[in-house]
Length: 275
Image 1 (cartoon, one colour):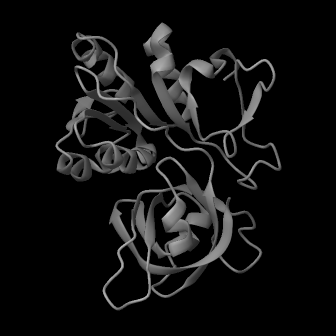
Image 2 (cartoon, helix red, strand yellow):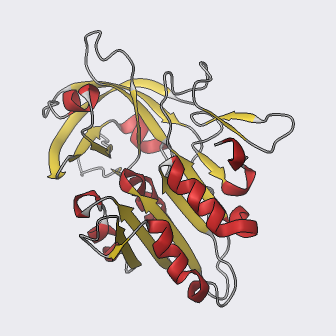
């Protein structure tokens, strides 16, 4: 059940280019939130910007120092792109922020370990952020293959974090400034045959809708092996406004909300010709 509550800013710092890391102390949400879920954050107390902003979980910690009151924090990694996120960069330590969360349905529990124990992660831009906590949750016994893409080298995020998990990391930038030149889907296609030599393995993805559509096309009949977190503009964050729908193959409920039934969907359930 989502909570509306207050959090306290612990740290808010620039990590590279236009990207910032915001750490918020909020035990009620930190305790409940799972990989792939998100929070709606009210950027400021005034009227503008009016709407809350959705942000995926990046990291969390429920540490309880001896002799201290129970604490818990979570972090979000965001890109400064407009007035709302510009206001976020001004949030200082100790500032109170209004939150609703956790919201949405995250990634499902990974399937049992198989003979090859592989799992593939494909992320584009800031979308890679929601895949890191999921990778950390399923790390034990998994052979992780992570594909990270961005327009340029300053858009490549979480590279060191995934390497700390001993993941096999591959990078693509559209301008060739880091890793292979091209899209992350091109990079995945160049490795797919080798990775699937022992049979398909589960795939988890997050990124812009164009990237997800390209991945669905690349996977073809095997797209049902992939769970993907969709990005969408949201007004409410909990399904009331129906402003973030995707069309699915579900005959009884074809229009599903990214904020409510998602943001994670099976790629095989989406009607891509309507995107």
